Image 1 (cartoon, rainbow, N blue to C red):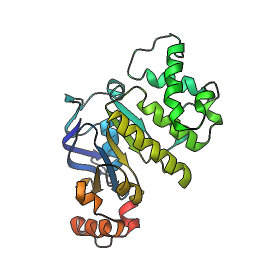
Image 2 (spheres, rainbow, N blue to C red):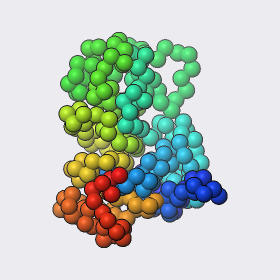
Image 3 (tube, rainbow, N blue to C red):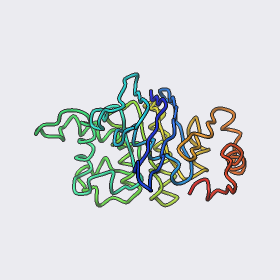
Length: 264
């Protein structure tokens, strides 16, 4: 579903601040597989997600989504197959619009919108059905401005927005980082349910090693623009945080490795 071949990305090329963000990354994520990604600051995690989303482009290499080459395709051209959620609940939604207006716009992602009414009776029914499993009562507050919701409620709603148009791939860039522990647990449980229900090829960047090990089918560790660890199945299930740090030290060659070094 998501295929990267030899992807390189350099920022500020030819200047003293030149930075190699991705160094020949190869990655193949089949439909339905959930990949968690960790690594230190500057490892290339967010750059990887931006390239898949279409908000950035590789200097070298190829990207395929659902078998189609989309390497130079802009974000809006692949929006119907790629759902996204960033870490800031304020940025993922439009606070001045109602719950149903936000979700109706999300339903039309990647389609021509024109000037037609976005909230119709049929869409309102779909929106209410999608919100009901959250258990927050948002399906009874469809006309409420999103700005009145808590951060956890907004991020939970944003998860519905990212998946309501039934994309094939989902990108999560530290989507629980701004939440308190209770809200983070809630959003992760919702994420788990939606990824499983829609069988989404999912890339989740996180700085939480516990969640990286607990959730998903596969764990990738990035360092200096490269994938230095790729664990799935029994290898991932057998890993705990101390052994993850030790293995990272062995494969990366870093002199001093702690949880702070690994996760920034």
